[in-house]
Image (cartoon, rainbow, N blue to C red):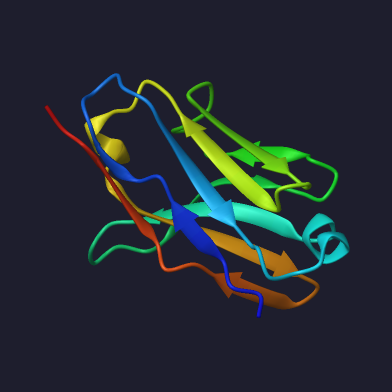
Length: 118
C-alpha cells in the first residue's frame, strides 16, 4: 500500500529544532520519485494549513510564516521526505501531517505532534 508514515515530532523549547520524516516504504522508487509531497499542520478546530511542499523535481514552496526557518527535502533512495524545522516558535505547535500526491490520488499520514513550549 501507499502508506505514508510520519515521525520525529515531540516537545521542544522555543528556538529549538526538530526534523520530521515522512517515509513511504511500500512503493516502488519510480512512483516515489513521481510523487509530490507536502507538509501540513493543524490545530484543533482549525483548518489544515500548508507548511511546505516539494515536487518530483525538488521545487519547493513555503508558507510565509515558516520561510527561512523550515526546509523541506527529499531522499529518493530512502523514499523519505523531511521537514527540518529551526528556530521553532510556540505558534508552530500543531499536529503535522505529510501528504503524497500521485496524479489525482492523495494519501495522508496519521500525523505527528509538535509542541513548542518552555
